[in-house]
Length: 191
Image: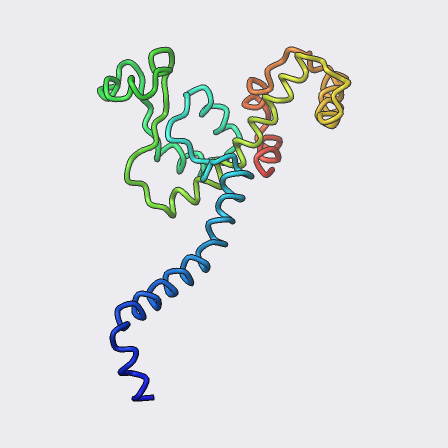
């Protein structure tokens, strides 16, 4: 073994470089599955959206979202947002970033919120966003009255049930939900 060392001595730098490159290659191979799963999970399945907590949301949209939150979650979510309107002192700071602010008030996510708080809000806002988008999709389908659309057959069936119990076609469900008795609202929130 010692006789081989004298022949390898001139190539010691190259041998160390090869060992380092093999180490780097092994680390890259180990990290590749994680990168690929992030591409699939966040990039493809979630459309590039890492979490459901928006940095800014219009007041009208937030009003719809909080309809589907219990009182505790509503307080937790709203304490992490600041309502900015034309009378706010931060109006000039945000108007260039959020042009809709010129037309209506916008809730801006506060800075410096802990990741644990974001994760907690992610579940609450994610569920509320799902319900709100479902209702808005149903309103859109109801206004189009596209009964030949097979992908939305279940939604159309439920809309026809609503119409059959006396709720007019052009009724805004977001106006009805706050007027419901607490027992019925709590059943909706459980979803």
